[in-house]
Amino acid sequence: MQSFAITMTSLSIGFSGRTIIDGISMGVPKNSITMIIGPSGSGKTTLLRAVNRLNEEFAGCSTSGTMQISCSGTTLDVYNDLTFNELRRRVGMVFQSPNVFPFSIQKNLLAPLRVIHSMGRKERYQRMEQVLREVELWDEVYDRLNDNALTLSGGQQQRLCLARALALSPEILLLDEPTASLDVRSARKIEELLIKLKERYTILAVSHSIRQVKLIADRVVILSGGKVVRNLEHRDFQNPGLLEELVDEVF
Amino acid sequence: MTFRPERILGIFSWLAVSLVVVPVCVLVVYLFVRGWPAMSYALFFGDTPWRAAIIGAQPVFDGIYPAIVGTSILIICSSIIAIPLGVFCGIYLAEYAQGFLKSIFSFMVDLLSGMPSIVMGLFGFALILFMRRTLFSHANTSLMLSAACIALLILPYLIRMTQVALESIPENVRLLGPSLGYTRWQNIVHVLLPSSSTAIFSGIVLSIGRAAEDTAVIMLTGVVANAGIPRALSDKFEALPFTIFYLTAEHRNDLELQKAFGSALVLLVLTGTLFFISYCIQKNLKRYWRLGE
Image (cartoon, rainbow over the protein chains, first blue to last red):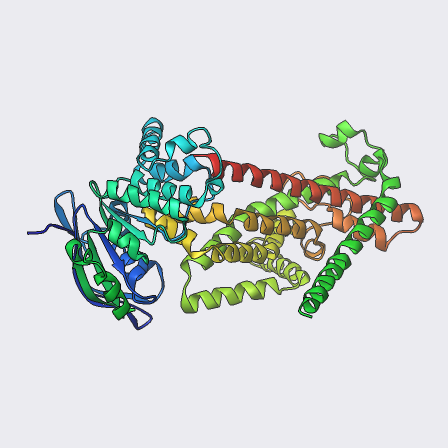
């Protein structure tokens, strides 16, 4: 039996009475990349943000149903067993456009470690180097860690965001179109990284790129009108033309 | 012919900037021309030796030194009261208040910002009268009362600037802290306030300027001519704007009017120095926020 890192049951989310996610039940397998695709307004980002309860930062958000995450062998109810902050420390997130703090490169990584984990100085620096190496950014920035993070290229900024999320040792990674604002080369780099990272993390990502989905996804969820219309395993969408056909049908 | 509206808009923008910049330059130059000749030892200390004046050993009767001290203490005291209060009220309105409560508080802040300064002075004066008739028969107008009333006067600037600065932070930056597991307070302290520091400091600078120049409030709450250097916050005091006012209103010859211009120039330099200090603090804080761990 497949082991799920995230399990949603009858999950519905609305904003000010308008339903965005409509009774979704699905599971996200551990140590795999599950990608959500669907037309604009189908609820992809809302579904992603439901996992770390980020939707609830907005006024008028109402949620029903259950969501469980499995972390370090324990299954926890997202709504009852964890506070917002405990949950978000276990579930890292990278946004669509590179979202760095307007501070130095090193502060982007060191500050959350100090604020969240109260880590010692030496430990923080070690962790920073470790995650920067993990996202293959260390060689590009080691001699300018005090420069403003905004001086990095879009691709580098996005890798810095990924490093920042990884630094906090999450078990699940949520990626909201992480390559949408990047050039092809930078996007490839992120994709290669994600393939490596899935060995250690469960990745749930939103994407608009069929090429990307075919390249890195282990599972695809097609969303339309706030409902899951298709749930595809890797072997299904590798059939030539099948995914394109489905997308044409849904979009 | 699509360039035309753009060109007209450009001309109007230049015109508007010129209409602001030219009078400011004329004003500053005029102040220098009229005030510079008055710059002398006597303008500051009269006949009193400066060492004795500074340590308060001898009173200064004919110089503006006590007024400089009075205004400086007034600005510092009112800033100490108003800045934390204003910034925290702004944080509350932007980050915590919702619905009806937010509307009510916002309305009150608007009401306070529309309050003429003389009304604020009258309020302070009435408060002292009330206190004298009730529990504190020795209560009197003083530097502390003036500072409290000035603080009330500048509060709306600080509240609004902080609120608007926080509310204008884009959603992606706002969500960054919570997505990393920051608590709401950690997000405010470590992300939102550093991101909006420039606008908040603009509010602080604006309010310092307002505190330095207001005359109506202090006239009713503690300022007097020739009070000397205040030795306690419960003392009456002298202040530069009031000195400029009475020197101008009661001048009998051109020399006294020149003294008023000299005092105005000193007030300008004093506020300019305070702005510069705020700018340095802001720059250092920004550097700390950018580089600190």
